[in-house]
Length: 389
Image (cartoon, rainbow, N blue to C red; front, side):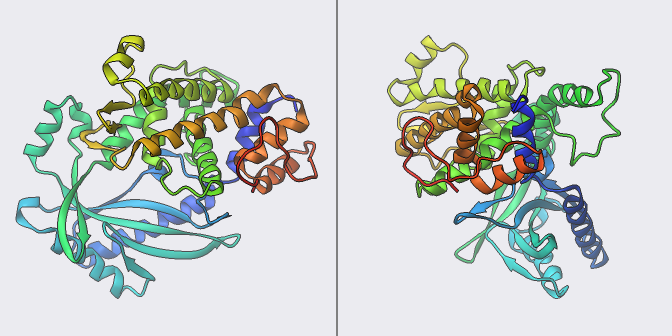
């Protein structure tokens, strides 16, 4: 098993969204946009989250892989001061419900279910109604240090709780631009590496197949998180926004020429430094770890600021127990995917199965014509408190 970087990348590709599936999703949301416009709504629908960032992984829920969740913003061209969240939310919902699609309402979005699109796999489109944020809010973001190129795309999304409508804040375009700016050197190097000629451009490579090592690290961590937290039966797992933000923040200081495993090791080691915040106050921590602001702690409050809205704490739901479990998870990531590089082939495959799932690993390695370890995963080092999937 000479190329463990390639092995790991091929494994993660199996749970990435396929080009066919991505094209299907794109056609579906464009059809929704066309229908909304036909009903008199001036809208701009665009992807947000993992679909926009190129970090989609197939969700793993209750011990099995399930349909993809793809998120989209439906931004209506109307001034916030001239409308209400109730009007905006339902102007979109009324059209979708009357279209004959399978639609249900959530707090912030309308969910359209498309089953069995490819190989018994489907996806759900989460359509989030929104309007552009008011200039005062945008100016406030800039005053807090957010670059204008990110702040200018801030939006107000609709939130419905207990049948009461309100505005929430968002900035999918700004966050995507922020991430893309950090990812650009990683993507450029990866593309040139695959092409084998370093004068090649990246425009001729399909977006769904062109992934940097930074994007792959995010996908790997999201998959390992899903397996780990399911097996220990913990619900307060780090959400995808936290993982993406942390990896990108650390990626700003990483060499874009690092291999996949080297970058994964760099990210995990950097994140593990913040485990000291469990026993140190932040001022002491900063004295020993200069310029380490990716994760912060203020008293009992854990803070991971949204890079395009500092007032939005992505870790607002964290407690000390949540943080402790997060750092325990990172230890297991290190064991399964970093330290395991030095194992022999058999133990290495066992570690991969423990961290990423037996079926996924076996299927991927079989397709690569690599040695398949035809037995249940066993413990590589210490006994883990879960069964292997």
